[in-house]
Picture (cartoon, rainbow, N blue to C red):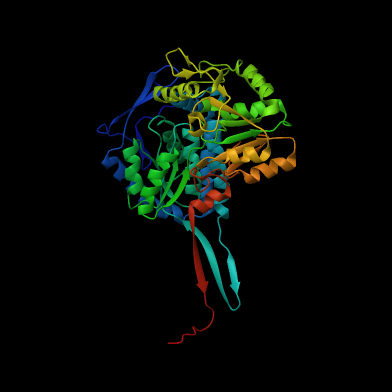
Length: 485
């Protein structure tokens, strides 16, 4: 299958597409049909060397530009993405299987938002003047250098820019490796940046499996690593980066709680739980998959959720009426099904769904378990699919303790009409990103990231500038140096 917007080679290095067929084959499969839409090749040592050398060489001159000049290029790239939103969204849909109804409004547009936002900030990245009597000091934010970005498969266009935009705004260069499951979209970002006027080599994209990512992370020329991935992968990457004292940002997985109190608006709470579990077929790291519902409204909540779940439109992702697409791969579908079987075997009540939808693609029904207890596998491990677990709770103190009983801490949410309780509860949730009477909002202006095993550092907002730059301090003495020697 040939797509209108399809990249023309596996890698984008030094401003052009590059192919090396000696690399291991990466087959790009359309999850809705199982059809092969592209064949790419993993980066060979030669490709890795080209990408790193190109980025290392380009970074110095890029850093010498003013922030305003860098920002102008990023903003132009943002404009190009918006102009081509539909074709980029179609590519994202074929790459991931997500419905076009989603990708038209979330994926390429989110990437454009990041480039526009950080392009606007680039000229304002400054330090401070510190008066010290007759003497004084100043600080300045300087680039870290060569950054490596490693992306996840669920939001390939967005992640390419969530990492690339702040890195470039701060004067760094980047070598980005997308997931081997969704390799196409980041290549178009690199192509568009060149079209917008970015110097060659500033943003290179190479493909590969885990071994390629490992080589990038361990290379001594690399100064910063930013990963989006699972908690287990994060530990390995963090450990490797630490050996070289590299800066890191780790945006990892979660097992996040969504707490619904008995005074919550039921329709809004159901909407929040839908967004926290079924959007993007449940393939979102911050999903609130542990839904704690106060006992007095549990049955009402479940009844209404299932009523609305039966109306979810499942089908061809290219049909803009479709609301729910396939899993990204057959492997991921099978992983999710294994969790569903464990849920049933361990005594949870399968309240809705739970089956494979027979088709040529990798579809699975939206799934709801009730009567879930805290020790069950589905309550403890990240599933990364459309599986919602519903827990009963009686009071505030109890639910906070249970919500925090996890090694992960990416997100958390609360639905209540008691605004004092809302703030009181989120203040006690051990999570980096929280929501009140909402779930999974992620505007670029707001920091995003987790604590505990869910990561280090933050994506987006002004916080990302701190993670893609470093502080230099200069002390200025105005008089003679008084030395005892």
